[in-house]
Image 1 (cartoon, rainbow, N blue to C red):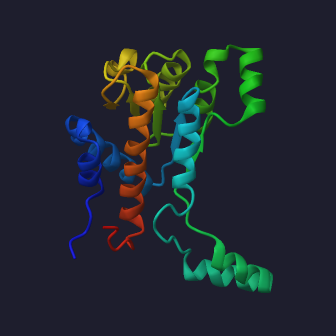
Image 2 (image 1 turned 60 degrees about the vertical axis):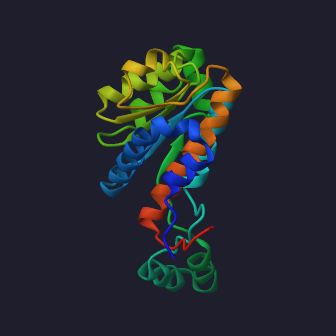
Length: 218
């Protein structure tokens, strides 16, 4: 049976994303290459895009639609170290694709907002976590969120690749992102409704590259 192309399935379900097919593929390729080189993904956004940031990390850090068994050598080490409990961990733990949501560290975020500048809540974390070859997924329906833009500026200085998820104009982010997925629409709710299937597809494409055990969902 022919394998499902996740990207083709996305376009079939959301034809309005056809013009972004190339950029979505580029985003997937960049994410895969970063992970191959030992990189990680940082994600940020505000409001609904804050929730999307957490959502993306949830799909990357554990099994999404594929099984992600840990290496047999690690399983054996766990069993040797902790006996029955180690064997349980060996059975239940999954390989994670390293990803951090910059929206969840409330003590750090409030410290930055109080001590320096609220617009720096993401930039400070990018500066601390980011390394050359890592990926920043920057989400803003308008493309103009200052704290997201500051994170992008910082990521570029750190040698990271920036993938932007925005509405159709791209806002200020249009000229700043290495890869821009500017879905059609300007109304925040409608833009966010299209962001979700895009990042789900990216997560499926990445996972399937590293953990190729989906047969077919049709």
